[in-house]
Length: 338
Image 1: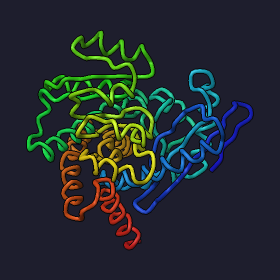
Image 2 (image 1 turned 180 degrees about the vertical axis):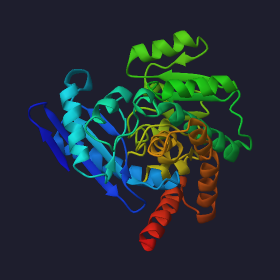
Image 3 (image 1 turned 120 degrees about the vertical axis):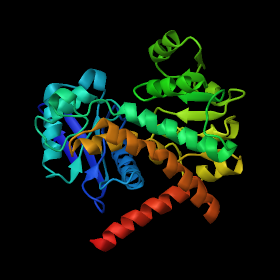
């Protein structure tokens, strides 16, 4: 669905990939796409990823995603968000929206004034607040599962973890890792984000950029926590880490990258499995939010990740393909019941 409101300047795309398990659920990305075609392609890819993420998280939701075209620092206004809320509302509940890159809890409070199918709102407005807290917790559980599978011990103590992107999720992930005694190296396109982390935690090292980070000697785990496409034909051949487990969506730049990782002996924890903590939280908001209940469900990401590694070994396929198979089976079973 293409949305436009000339008065506010809104130009947005809402993509619904599947409703087999229930109403499509996925965030709203606010980003300065170069072209409308690029925005449509991103929305479609992200919506598909949400179908698989929600299925693997055990949620009764299909996948959807929305993108608003523009610079959130310059173009985001109350009128634009209200117009966007009306667009989502026009779908009658087939798509439930939430926060994503470039949108925040305060924005969802505005959208919710025009649309009842809005999650990720502030506690003051009946919501659950910042979903990045449980997203980071889920990624941390995915790292523990990866360590258990590869090294026979879930502990991350003395492991060196490189985090690309220390924004909403990455900075919380730093806290989990340091609390367990891991060594942390970070990078971000925003110097102020890196500075905020290193000033708060002097033991954290900074890499000049992502290219330097993936080449860091002694890296055990690489955590892409920014935009997609981090695992590509340039980064995979030089990656020093033995595990990739991060919060970014669509980390594999193109089909075949998962095999390239496997050929190099690098264990890949599928992104949409380990970063599902946030969607678990916003989905729970629709039923009366309970943080402890959500955290317990997000903790199950550890077991889900281990099950994917076991399925991958059993079927002789990369973990990404194993996760896809499990998710597709759940969606197919739901369609069969329908």
